[in-house]
Image (cartoon, rainbow, N blue to C red):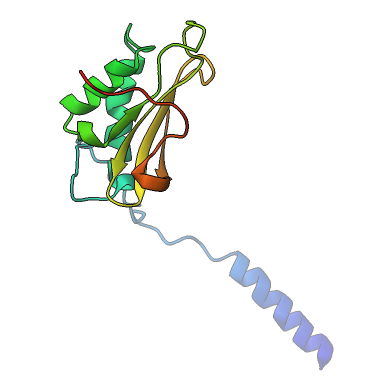
Length: 152
């Protein structure tokens, strides 16, 4: 009897393997939809978080980084002010070292709310624009060390 069952099982496997494909048109696979509309450019969102505004901060600073003024802290501050960021909430480090050489790194920041800062860094030491959201330091500062007055 076991031999009969084995033979029946083998015959069933062979028959299943020989079942013809259904004839007729195949069911089409839906194509994924791709949006052809460009994404909206980032904008200043005064009531949103620093993280929500990081892309706009970065985009604004990137324009300066790609210009002839890439080594001028004032150019970053002016661009951020023109974009709508609060000048009174900003800090920038000097463009020159203490011995008068171009700074290896310039940092600029915008204090955001009571706890966060948008911070950018550029210069030969980074080789590119770097931006981050960082926690505020004591007394609402964003940058460590000497900064220059934004009095223009």
